[in-house]
Amino acid sequence: MSSATKTETVTPPPAPISLIPQGGFGGVLRQNLSDGGIVTWRNLMNVRRNPELLLGATIQPIMFVLLFAYVFGGSFGGEAYREFLMGGIFAQTVAFNSAFTTIGMASDLQKGVIDRFRSLPMSRMAVLLGRTVADMAVNALGLLVMALCGLIVGWRIRGSFLDAVLGFAVLLLFGFAMSWIGALVGMLAGKVEVAQSAGFIWMFPVTFISSAFVVQTTLPGPLRTFAEWNPVTAVADSARNLFGNPALAGFERPSGWQADNATLYALMCCAAIFVIFVPLAVAKYRKVASK
Amino acid sequence: MGSPQREIAVRAENLVKTFGATHALNGVDLEIPTGQVLGLLGPNGAGKTTTVRILTTLLKPDSGRAFVAGHDALADPDAVRRSIGLSGQYAAVDENLTGFENLYMVARLYGMNRATSQARARELLSRFNLTEDGDRPSKGYSGGMRRRLDLAGALVARPTVVVLDEPTTGLDPRGRLDTWQVISELVADGTTVLLTTQYLEEADQLADTIVVIDKGKVIARGSADELKNEVGGERLELIVNDAADLEVTARVLAEIGSGSPSTDSHTRKADVLVDAGPKALIEALRRLDGHNVTVTDVALHRPTLDDVFLSLTGHHAEAEAEPEPKAKGRRGKKTEAAA
Ligand SMILES: Nc1ncnc2c1ncn2[C@@H]1O[C@H](COP(=O)(O)OP(=O)(O)OP(=O)(O)O)[C@@H](O)[C@H]1O
Ligand SMILES: [Mg+2]
Image (cartoon, rainbow over all chains, first blue to last red; front, side, top):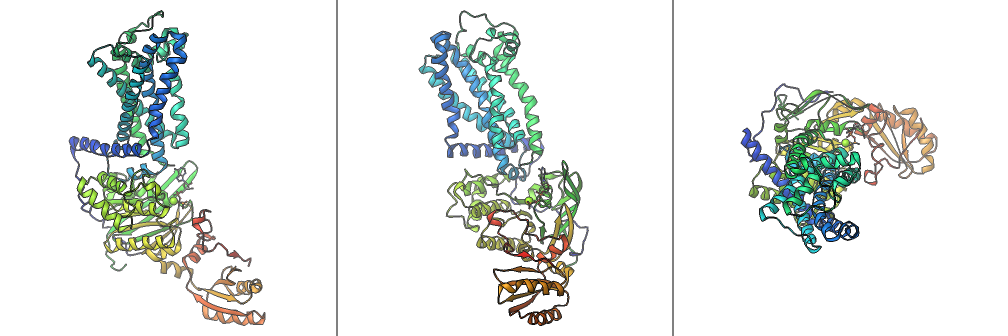
């Protein structure tokens, strides 16, 4: 019943081979960024090896642009609607892409990749950061494709260059923020099959009850209030303002502080999402168990 | 195994973990002296993976303490992570990355610089016979190759403690031998190894100490020899000329042996645990002769670890092994004869 004689000596820590010692706030920050960069690289390699992953991020928005522009556009005001539409489709697409984060997290979890990461002396933020940053790159590509498509159907940037840059920056920032929610949902889902529906389902009310495709003032009662305060509305309206796309004529103008300050409100929404969901996602990551 | 003054590289004290109503661990203690191999043996659901996950900082126990390489796994998990290499039960390779990229990424995440990481990845690929396939996506790898890649991932930082959860499950015999070879080399380098397995033969081959767990409790521990001595006696094994005689043979062996005999009609083999080997052997042959049973071969063996397991738990260790084809048990065709 006995193995070798027990002693109370505990082995001193071994000298690890060429591991960069980390210390202090600077060290932690550097490690977050460097580990996050490596995980981003890994995720982008995944996209490169599976270009079909990009179909959802490119073909789908193109379809939305064409469908809404020509199927709905006809009854909603033709050219003017197409101009109005683009800001909404941009906002909807970057929000929808958080579902890729959801699926990606769930897939890593299911395959045990997260276990491997968690057994390494790497930063706790890195896996989440690497995932959300890689998905932001996918978002940037999606925006580019959509913008080209928009130009073809008659959409134009009528504002200044700087405003346009700011417009795309707000869209990317919003997509990045939504990715953190997506990452949390992915870890809660745990399985790819669950993530595939969980990642999208909540997107439909969030993106459709907004000013993405209609003027929010046309919505009935509570839906109107929801739409007026919906971050998707703020991001869509902010994009329209910054790209210089006029509001649809013939509808009641949206009013209220958030409507008058769409860009500022959009930025505040992003900040609020970060403040709430980054800590939640990190906490969940720390104790998430695969399977 | 030798010296009495040994440093302890891994220690688990009274680990308890429940998942809802499931008591995965019910107070598991274990200790691995530096440079030794501990084989954690148990059937499906025994708590092997749960123990491994706690020791590798992936899971927090409800109570109990865990120390690895001189660090408290609960208080200072990062220090533990720097000293260990883990190869989990299911190969955690990124299938869209090549073998090289998988190892390179792990090396980078251990904090090695680019050049060191590349060199280390190439070195490990060649050590695990993956050089030729190192630059194609691991999606196309066989199960055995993925296992090897995962194992290589555990060794990237030359950890002082290596934890392997069922490293040979799903490997072909050649792959199993290769893995055993790697583990022997690790030990030769002074690495401490915690290894879980459902294969008694594997624990017998590799482990200095075996800890047998069942239902979250340690039910036995010691060297393979100590465990076998504990069962005592020997296994009497004989082969009869005619499979039709197996039934009467089983009856005779049941009278003589200390356990229930088992028979295998395919190999015409019958065996049973006996207390006094030679005497029992002579007695068995005498009685079988009286029944006109022709015995073509007879042998006395020291008990196997499977015997140990059977006597401790009342069931064979591998009988419950996953029904997948890869877990084809050696005892697949054997049937338990009623005593
Ligand atoms: N995350 C979890 N949630 C719920 N139950 C769990 C979880 N992990 C393990 N269990 C349960 O705890 C018990 C021990 O599981 P564990 O995975 O440690 O067994 P094991 O010895 O590794 O088995 P196997 O040989 O099948 O790998 C089992 O009953 C299992 O169902
Ligand atoms: Mg297990």
